[in-house]
Length: 321
Image (cartoon, rainbow, N blue to C red; front, side, top):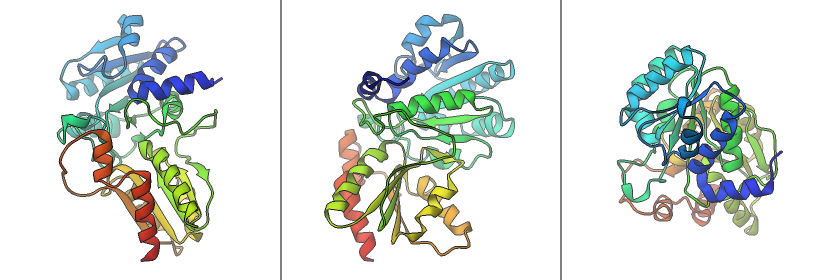
């Protein structure tokens, strides 16, 4: 049973702290869970797990490629390894190893990319993970999860554990993460959650962008625009039915803390291109194909027009085209 105090705590901790706390709790029930980190134990929120499970904890050092190979070996021995590092290093530096061990060999590895999007703030563009979804969703057989808040993250971690096959979990946002889900709900890999109904526009959001998209929908409502909102927590396999349900809208919109090329918007575009039905136009909101000056999390969202006010403004422009 999920308690409201847990939901508030997960919000304060942010995605990384919630991940480590919940994995520690889940490990009490499942002795096959192991945790690996590329020299990011505390940063990954795994300090408590390492303390309570020294025989199931592995710091591989700054060797992300080796970490995935070691995790694959553990999976072949019947363990369920959760391997963690920064999202850009996980998906970009280790792309070949994800493709080989997780995609081709189908090893039961759960790769957790922390600090995705602009979470790394002043570390700058070298640490921003804005292409990781594009890379992972191009690899066959790897489930890609992008939870919206702390509660959904715990459900994603449990679902990843129960899923027999490779999974990549993308963690976005910073501490004091906005709460999207205040009550328990059913989470299923590949099944989006319809959070709000509307007739004029359908907004598809993922990860950290679900909360500001809901706020943008309220702004649009005040301006006489009825907006539906769906939480696309699974990028691969994507919920085709949820996307096609927007066929009666005037406009479809994707919102993501990721490049508009290759991520959620591109996954939706693929679905639209393959359907035989006439569908509304798609507006892709996210990070443009350029490297902007680095800054705080709030500053980066402002630069890329990913605040509720700017999302609403761009949606209204899209409706006027």
